Length: 218
Image 1: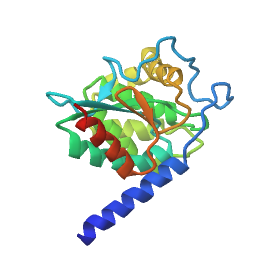
Image 2 (image 1 turned 120 degrees about the horizontal axis):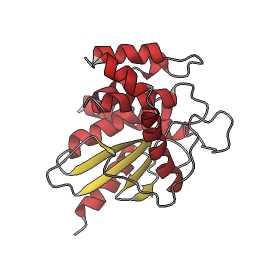
Image 3 (image 1 turned 90 degrees about the vertical axis):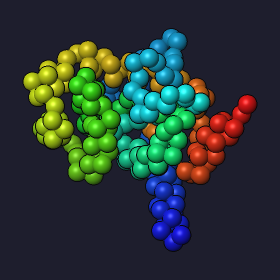
Image 4 (image 1 turned 180 degrees about the vertical axis):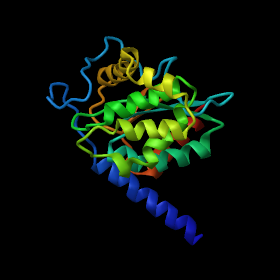
């Protein structure tokens, strides 16, 4: 029981840190990581979006617009992982790119994840980037060498990975997610949508309650 209470307390603290670290996005910022404009008909999730769970009969879709370098997203990561484990048979969890201004390696990290996705390793790279964020986040120099090392650790074909990382189509894939986010009113990370509706939970319990309430609807 004490262990469960401790875990709950840690999750609350992490979630509070995520909300407290919310970063405001300004499309006109000179330090913007990606040059993108809102899409005319924005969608929270598309057929090409990266799904972290694929229930046989999904009852709900939870989408997170995230930045791998954002400390708030890093703090929210274990919360999302706990929810994924609990609701993996009922809820589709989706991750979408939204690199933020001021993060030297945020857009590069998104391209790294997308390059890994092209070899079927999105989820593995997604987890790798978040669990190692403290090692490379907030750096002022490029961490491309570090990210290539992650790709090697995941056993990726490095020739294909390097080509994908530098392919303009990969950068465009990241911008496509960001354009949807901007069109939906996303201004910071992490931002969550539940079945297309933007939500602002203040704790892991609130996010869980939102999911449970939606699942209980007839």
